[in-house]
Structures are given as C-alpha cells and as structure tokens.
Image (cartoon, rainbow, N blue to C red; front, side, top):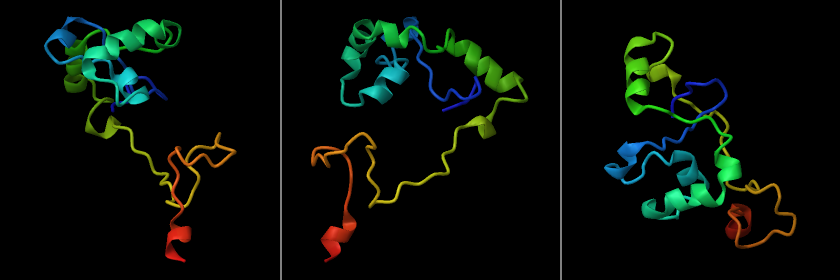
Length: 113
C-alpha cells in the first residue's frame, strides 16, 4: 500500500482496467470483505455506496505509476508499515464484550496449562 494521501493507505480504482485484472481495483472492498469473490466486489460497492463513495479513490492507474516514477516524495519508502504487533493473547476485536468464540481472538495461555 502506498500512502499517496497522508493518512489513507488503501484506495479503490473503478475504471475499465478492472475488466482485465479481475476487479483488483476494488481494493477497499476486498480489505473489508476478503472472502467475497472478485466477481462480486462491484456488488459490494453498489450495496454500500454511501460508504465507498466518500472514500478517496484512484482515478488512474497510469497516473499513479507516473507519480511513482516522477515524484521524488513517492516511492518504495512511501509504503505503509505498521509497527504495532498484536500479541496472540490480546483480544483482537475490542467490541467483543461477550468473548464470542466466533471472533478472531487467541488465548494461548489457556492452551499452555
């Protein structure tokens, strides 16, 4: 992910290149719903248009490539790096007050005993 706009690390592209790239431009939608097949990602955008229409988007893949090559402030070091690691015993979903077993959280201490 390139941080072209400060504080925004993913963008979607809704142009014609999606027809030949298996909708890889629906990047935000893919991150929100990673198990939705690529062929259904445009439907996600239509269903939740009020959410996706307000997000920054990539208007031109060629333009982004051109910026990457010509803009000295955009390059390999513009990639987003996360420095916070999640401990395997940490509750991943902070909204899970009921300790729902179907959520993604791990309790390694319980397994060690």
